[in-house]
Amino acid sequence: MTTPHNGMMPDISPQPLYPHNRVKRHLSELFRLALPVVIARIGMLIMSVVDTIIVGNYDSSSLAYLNIAHAPFISLMITGFGLLIGIMIMTSHAIGRNNPKAAGQVWRACFPYGVILGFGLAVLAWQSKWIFILSGQPGAIIEHSTELAHILALGMPAALIYISCSFFMEGLQRPLPGMMLMVAANVVNLILDYGLVYGVWGMPELGAAGAAWTSTIIRWLMAGTMLAYVLLMRDHVLFGLRDGFANWWHHSRDIRSMGYAAGASQGMETAAFSTMQLFAGRISIMAAASYGITMTILSLMFMFALGLASATSVRVGIAYGRRDRADMALAGWIGLLTTMGVMFCLSLPLYFFPAWVAALFSEDAVVIAGTSGLLLLMPIIFPTDGGQNAAISALRGTGDKWAPTVLHMFSYICVMIPAGYYLAFVRDLGVAGLFWGIVIASLVAVSGLAMRFRIVSGRELPSYP
Image (cartoon, rainbow, N blue to C red; front, side):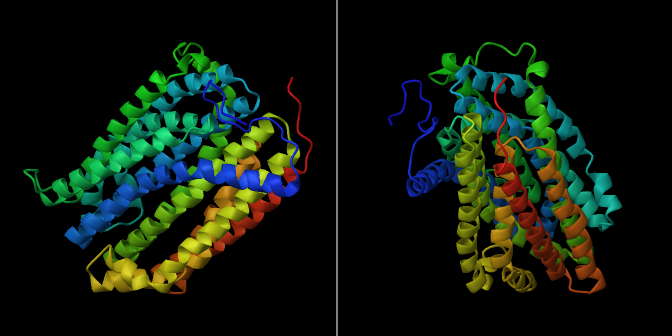
């Protein structure tokens, strides 16, 4: 099948294929969609990795301050991303129905929502100091991390403007623009980050604050570029992208409803991981640095899972949109199993060469030793954590809202936090106990969500009114 002249991607109608051909088709489409999304998502984390490497080699204490400052900011930003996930899912449903005008209306309805949401979350991120105080952080961390949190908060609206446009393009099965923009942003980030942290090339030496300012500047550049691309794309008339934002609140009702569930799920998961970061800060500054480095590596590799999960959601969503239950189920299971397999393979270099990887992020022997021990758990954490994300994305693609959210929140709020606290402080395992808590929670999450998808994918799909 050739690509239509309107630019929409192929494979949106039922195809009478034999089972092995259907599997091959799903795998092909999964990786075709996932690869640009993976690169784009990795690009988001590579900026954090660059921050961690540059600031970690500049000063270990500054790295701890930056990691603590990122905890509430990332939690709020990921919550915002979750609240907007309906853009990608509902766009894919419209594409499954071969209705480009409906797809365009999804974006026009949700873009103003994303802007308002971005400024609201920025206000919350600015108030991070009380979180540092309530969590019992040392005075030095409270002072320096609050300053960094203020800088990061200025970039929150830009992050949500960018993601609202990016989710729309991914729902259209056009992830390449987001990927290319992210690659360019990382080149700029590397140069500006190094210059502002160390004070080279005529730039001021700002230390960790330089990394925070770089992140904020890059986010605004990306937001403006991605918005311009959406409005100027060649077939914007087909989607009605310039038809205005009238009645956007009414038109975004179903999309917002889906986002409330996803936002609660992602926000609570990220908040739970941020709580673990704060636990690490209570152990020691070196523990906070080791935890931060390990989580940066985990987050970086998790972008592979997130890209595959996003592609899974789109594939499931398109099959759901054309009411093909068998193809929807197949897309979900292929996405889940493929994600777990890829993540296990990615964990092996960290398991066999932990000290070498840790040394990339710090020159401190204590930090390297602590991080090396944590990396040995990655062959368990990677596939289970990645698998739960693929499973919940498959469920989102079917329109399932609150059941996966409850399962997700139970795993990370009711299981991970108590288990991590108990193992770290009561059993005195330190930062390693925090990661064993993550292992337990991820196993619970992937098992529960997989069972839920089996139930949902076995039901008859509702017909359109």
